[in-house]
Image 1 (cartoon, rainbow, N blue to C red):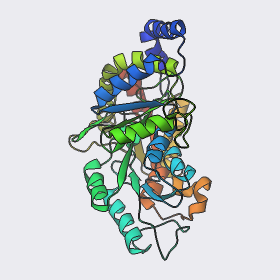
Image 2: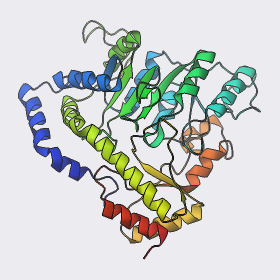
Image 3: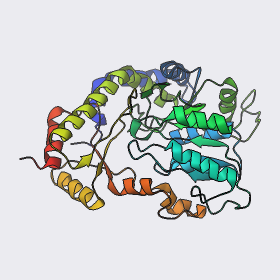
Image 4: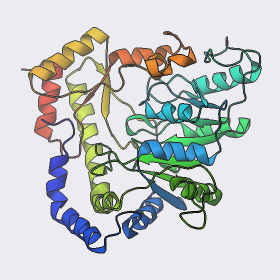
Length: 390
């Protein structure tokens, strides 16, 4: 059994993908070929925003978004510690300071109440209200510039509350939708829920390439123009005029061609993912599995990048994973160590206990196989092992 089975998908569309690749080989425009623009147009229309900007990875998408807002050394950006390294990494790469905000235990996404506390702590220079990095000047905490919520496991964060706080405190919001392309909330589709939405086309994502790739989405034409320049070394009117310091963040034409074909079946695969998630919920409830199952807020549809559950304890998680391993069923842990406890972020000076919900979830969470082609028999086997059924 595969944790994520890309082979079945490839067999479904192999001939069409090969045709798309052949078209690129024929026209020979391997960098910024016509497929890149086509992908930007198709996906921005799907998301429901004016502009899409394809780039080399989800990490580059986040970096370009921050650079478009001229984030500089000393700026403060609020984000979650319960996410992949890249979310806070791009902040640190620009020598800005990540300020972490704990998560809601039901959604694993940024808790708006904790976000308000963090902003207040920065505004009042009072770290007693909310944990803050020790490297900040205690006598003059800087006013935050922006927020990067994360749509973890495919579930959009609470942007209604987060955007309201951002407006109140004059902050920008960048949606880390690396896992949530195709998800929906009451406010619209993922990637349209903030000033800039950023997604990833890493192969294991709901819409994945056969290599790295990403995209930024925005309704703001000025931000789009800045990112267009930043994506190609700060390019101006031509490749040898450079208006600012940028990056080499282009999406390869071959990957764009592959994504265009994969997007043809994406809506169908999204429905299949939701069916798989629903079946997991039903089977595990029926079997009284010793797990906390994922729940969706009213009016929200997840892209189900992962199906993640909470065991009752770290020990019980290990026990269940071992049972599954013996049955040749793969599992994964996203994420075993919150970012504030990672060595790479030791310079911030956070301590164990600063973000108790993230730490508790990291101790208990694990993910089951999830992809559109997971069969009912496979899911029944997984549930049977977890629930100790004969």
